Length: 226
Image 1 (cartoon, rainbow, N blue to C red):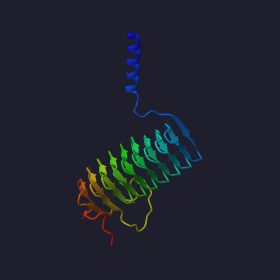
Image 2: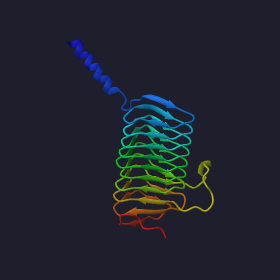
Image 3: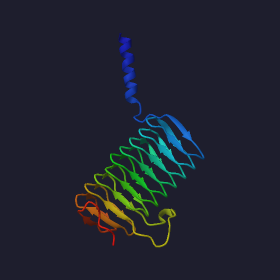
Image 4: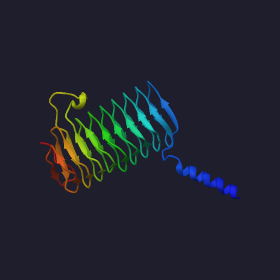
């Protein structure tokens, strides 16, 4: 009997010590898309030329592609999501332990999602709806919408084009539109190194602002640009 209790105690201890994010099989391709089956657990998902799809409830570690989009349905989990040429879109209640990044593509996170790191793109918009973000939001030439009920613990940064040797499209460009929606919170500073149009809802709370003047609004959507 004591031996049985000891075995049970050891099993419980090992279970408690196991990482919260258990990994399964890796999938690595050069050409071709990857689909993570609903409810299944994977390791790293990597491809060069192809999109990656996470079906509802799928879990993975690092999810990476070069030329392709990443799409996650509801209740997916991953360590990181990254692509170079492609957008990233997640459904409701997605959980990303670290960060999300792309170079040429938009990023969208739906209601109830949580991200433990930064969300960044160079050429592409970023949209959050009722999402909790532990890190920062960064872009160069994309619009940003921190939608209703979202909470960003970091700040927002819009860099100048060609900062740090990163190539972005030159020529006359429209100023990015930055919207902080109803009941949204951005705890950190909002730093703009290029011209932007900044709209902040009357019920929203933000940190310090540098490089722009906030336009407050109280309607469900921000005013139309002139």
